[in-house]
Amino acid sequence: MTSTLHRETVENRVFRASYLALLVFMLLPLFVVVVTSFSQAGRLAFPPESYSLVWYGEFFESTRWLRAFTNSIIIGVGTALLASFLGVTGAFGQELDTDDSLGAILQPLVLIPLLIPPVVLGITLLMYFSEVGLRGSYASIILAHTLWATPLVYFVMRSVFSRFDWQQLDAAHDLGAGPVRSFVHVVLPNVKHGILVGALLAFIISLQEFVMALFLSTPSTTTIPVLAWTQIRQALDPMVSVVSTFLILISIGAIVLAAIATNLEWLSKQLS
Amino acid sequence: MTTTNTHDPSSLDRIRDAVVGQSNSRRALLLMAPLIAFELLVFVIPFFILLRISVASGSADLPYEPGTWSLDAYSSVIENILSFDLFWSILVYSFVLGGAVTIVTVGIALFYAYAIWRSNGLVKSLLLFSVILPLLTTLVIRTYAFTPLLSPTGTVNDILLSLNLLSEPIQFVPGTVGAGIGQLYIVLPYAVLAIYSVMATIDWDIVEAARDLGASRPRSVVEVVVPQVMPGVIVATVISFAWSVGSYAAPGLLSDNYTFAIYIERLLLTDQRYPTAAAFSVIMLVLMLISTGALFAILNRFGGDFDLA
Image 1 (tube, rainbow over the protein chains, first blue to last red):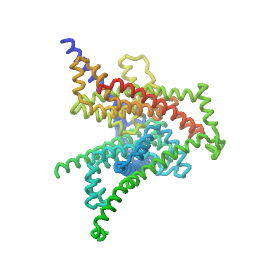
Image 2 (image 1 turned 90 degrees about the horizontal axis):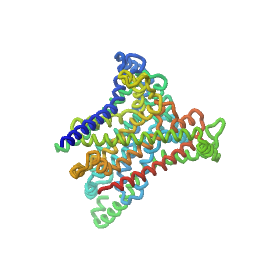
Image 3 (image 1 turned 45 degrees about the horizontal axis):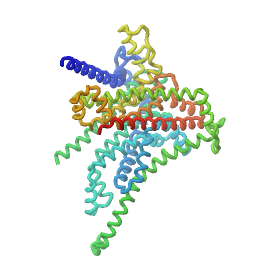
Image 4 (image 1 turned 90 degrees about the vertical axis):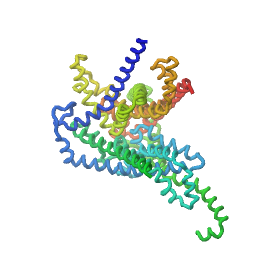
């Protein structure tokens, strides 16, 4: 009895120590990024020898970084809008569809781009966009990012729509509402938080994606991850850490926004 | 419209039924049309162009000679592979790195997902947060943070040296170990979430029952939990494998070796050899497809054999 008890406590300790070690492993790189952004020296070291806000000042004076920042936001918003439109209409259409033959093709078709190495997608799209004359435009990067963001929006929306009570839509039709009106008044209020979460996911994906952007961007459409990549390969200075800290903050902000949106939804349901 | 309706309700009903019945599938088609058009224009057609360029002949001053047909690119790549030359070593390196990262990732992900599943309250939130936060950070940054940690003058070596565990620093970065760790860090969150989402639906009582029947704790996990999360494990394996074989950022930043993704970029942007780059991509995609299919079949059988339900 005592030996089994002893074994259990040992097992417990090993178990806890292992997952705490993994927790440290998961958070350490991000911690390193945030801490080194406050370093004073020009060389990246962890932990830094002295701390200052020098590199934050540099960031706000650097037109290159601010430009890349604007580009990232433009491309992210574009991707979020396009991917949400495609994902929502596609998932909604598939839900309305009575026979599944088209959906059976659509679902794998939407999913496959996620499993193809981004470098292969990048060169494929680079060759394609050069042929059709889109090379170097914001649109080329937005389309590429949408290829990755759409599957996520699509699957989020499929699960949201699968929980929607479709009899409500039939009822709206029976009461004489047209397709657009019934969608706006009956379906939309029930799925809008799902759409918001999908759009935010798409935005975050676009904000971080860099391999496809690396191939498709030109100096005037460089996004933050691409500029970070080229900077890192030249010199390891803490500027990239500063930018990364901003990116982490924006992403956390987006998640908080999504959480608040879904929670407000929940709250309004409780109150009504 | 409404006035005619009130005059003849029975014909209205017929029309309405016909319109609703028919338009439902037509409307569905109309709604799916943008997505289908997008996938065709931005995914399917580009791939045909990639295939087309892979069978064009190279050119001295252009990336490729438009309008020509030639299998030179394929024959040169395949010949190179069969004579165990550069392409062969790149292929092997990509698959070995991808395979190793996949095995370690899925093992750790199973354990971590289990830890999240079994914990509660603040610890559970913290563990989940630690999985989601890296997902929100661009992989350039996730990878770059390992440089000050793993370089010969980095933090890990400093600690190991000061503890006298090492006599001289190990060069993790640049090197294959560093690239592997970086890639592991990139795919681990996805693998954990894929497995956890399935594990969260399991009834803990089944595991409890196995323990009451005398199974030790590790055994109850391996024989009861693992078979049930097999769908999640399959997704995690396929994702980790596909992304790690095609990895670009981690080996690019943390090692000096070529994976096929890095080499394709070189062929394309530095050497401007479009047909060769396209042919090598197609060959690698086919090999990845075959190996992923094989992995899928093996894991499916494994899951089936152990299925208790």
